[in-house]
Image 1 (cartoon, one colour):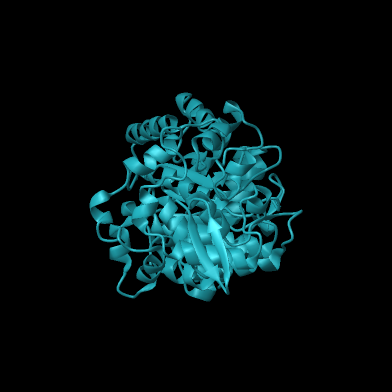
Image 2 (tube, helix red, strand yellow; image 1 turned 90 degrees about the vertical axis):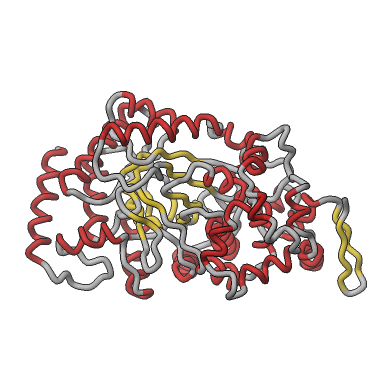
Length: 469
């Protein structure tokens, strides 16, 4: 089926839904690289006009990627809530946009529709929204998850302490972790990207992070962001695994490039839930997975099926939500300027990703970042950080000086998060906030009201460092 629109006397024809989706997307260097982008702004506007008239029913019944060839497409159809869809299926995308932004569509309404909305529908409506629309719509929705604490409540802003080290030095990782805790960060997770994909290295990091959490009785969780198979192998050797991590993408072939499939994710989740039961302790729920995504990952693996990168990112969220995760975040500018060229494109992608994740029911965070060869800087990073905080993002990254010395990219610092909490009047996760108060640690840049307890904590931290030497 073809789609068409007329703009100032010029007629535009789009051969199928896949082409229409690509042409209607905001400018992205990745779509240009793949030959999917609009050739000019007139064509982009015409594509948006034609897309606005497409119904949600049409999108449901015209999969962009054949389910017979792709397990992600099958998963999306298998998890679709057909009963709830009856409420919205007749709407055109233009009407669906208005529905989402209308005050009558409150948080409870949008929660009820999470699985009635497919990733392709979320992507399509995002293409029709301005940046302001994406912020306003996302701010309506809080998706709460629970592990050792509760993330995503309204009025809170979490932080992943990311104490990466270029040689996986345990003392260096520990020092950066303790630095983050003293800034009031770490409620989302203490999560390390290892430099070495080694079971021994992953196990050593897991043990030291768990020692910090247990010795200081911190209501948070740890994670080492290696391949799922490496983490499970470490767990089999007796290492404590709080959250099971994996990068995921929006097509079967792209996930295969990460060395993973849906069956492995399902098996891994069940094994970690059982692992938690055997360990005992204060677990608040079965949200045990941590997923990272990013626009452009499928194209970089030549696994995009001629689908635009925004839509494929939404499909990655369709994968993530099937496994009831504790954390999900887009690493929005990490892949590089081939996919998101500059600060403007990175900002747009970050707002799109956060909105789509929230609409689809995910506890959505963002790694607000850029590579050093992108046309972006720390000011553009700050802009996106403020916009996403206004949109109700669950959590951000916290790295010393916003400079990841292992992955070699720029992101957000402990200071940045303290600034956002102070500016917007936000607190950490409630369990973590109580722990900070008990130990005299501020989370918004103000002087602690309990300096005596802080001194006691500093002595404990010094003991942990000495024990690592």
